[in-house]
Length: 185
Image 1 (cartoon, rainbow, N blue to C red):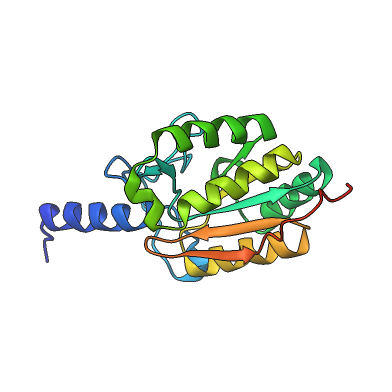
Image 2 (spheres, rainbow, N blue to C red; image 1 turned 135 degrees about the vertical axis):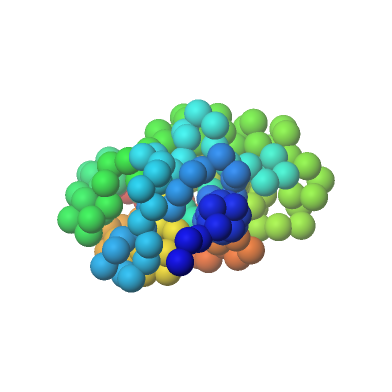
């Protein structure tokens, strides 16, 4: 049976929109052991640090988990755990505290009034507080349920002070941030 390439193309764009929130991505990289399909033309890096995904002017990396770590040692331990669980270095992006502060400053200036209806603007403010306390951030591409659960487990065991998984419609607190004095590393 010959498949209709137009149908395949539409299906791939639909999956891309759900997973990445953009039409620019040409594939979905997933783990074959989870029974998911790996497209040959999947992107090497799932998020561009210099052009982060925004919704209404606010950071929203759909299909990613954002983790904040108080120390570089904890962040490095998380990176090592990710590698041990099959995540390549192309699937994560690091933000130093000053980089996250700068991103949040731009977001707060450029945010649409519609951003106030979602959780994204509140999270931007939490990310600023954490950055001011010296936290570094790791943004990990985890589009599938199993991948997101693995990253969530890593966040909890590797001492993330906060972590959220960004879905298309819901942002799940994986490790809930509790405001208070800055923890001692």
